[in-house]
Length: 179
Image (cartoon, rainbow, N blue to C red; front, side, top):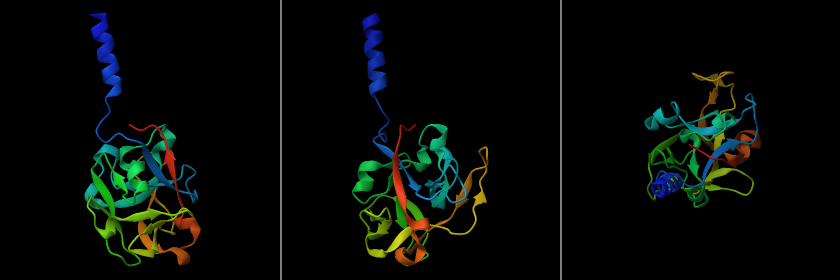
């Protein structure tokens, strides 16, 4: 009986959700007006995020000790140009290939509007138009619905990489335990 219990415990700890791999959050390098930093985030709250509403920049949840599922990207797929949020089974997708386009979420496919490159100078460029980068809105943040102090959010767009300034277009990948 003890042996069966030990085997069961080992297996329970070894089994991970299908989406659990090496997860990262993608954080703006500049803190702007939130010392916790801004991460690419699905609109809505964690497991209840609203995929159809697309992406935003939001206070990073990692200050709470873990990466939240609505900010958790698959590191391996990001390195291959696919910004995949595995808990939700969706990928980051440009609304269009022009400046000012929003970043939406959709089922992962092999279309050009879902292919991005994390560059050596820490910008996330759309592969089909590498003049365009993922950029955080340069205006003041808005307060979100939770957190102490309140979480902050900003819009995300595709902007001209050179004209937008690195303050709003440079990102880093943070690894952490998630779930």
